[in-house]
Length: 284
Picture 1: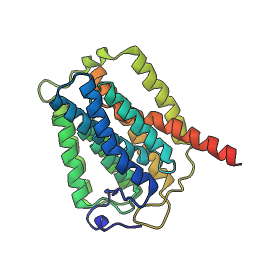
Picture 2: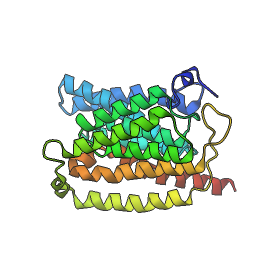
Picture 3: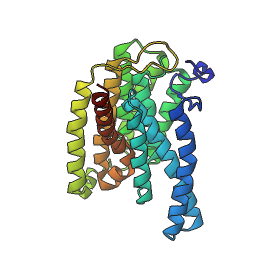
Picture 4: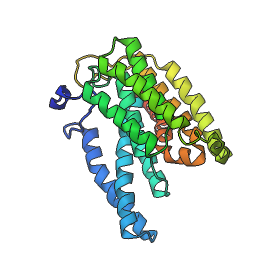
């Protein structure tokens, strides 16, 4: 059912308490914030840093949950497992590149059309601004290229609007400048990658790629339109999330650690689908 906010945004997905899963998230986010805050204090972290960990950890958990919904619209378990993994990472002391995560979420929604309509001008502007932050604050120089792919894929499915077309060259310039300014991106940082983490990413990549190929139907309806989401669009969105997870390796171990939320979503999609398959077999 359409929400009043959809008059202004085709990418916003409000969390409404009338849905049990949404209500659960509304309860969990403040609980996570308080829990991470207390956990940090127990670990002898100062009041200021503990507050920051609690706030940022809860925000990361929410964004991870939201991205999990885009990765696997039919299975709520995926989003909640991804959220749990993000909370675990935060509790273990990992930080998150929140602007990069939000930019990826918006880019995937451009493709998935889980809301329904094409991105509006405000959505496109927000996407560009999030990419600016991802690049020049968090150093995720690869994010604009992911966003360009999202806009290009949407164009391939349906003729896009002028703002979307203008955003493509703007994002390309942003990504190219980020790569070359200041002597260029130092790809030697990839030497800091830990072998175990690389193996984990490779295994997840292979398994998720198989899941994408084998996805044949999406039953979940669009938020603002009374029709199911496009399976091909959702597959393309899944591929973008997978590509972003792989691209995070370009930042070496620090870049990978800062984007654990993306890997959490990828891993959770494998577990969430298996849980759903097991439930279906039991019911049969």
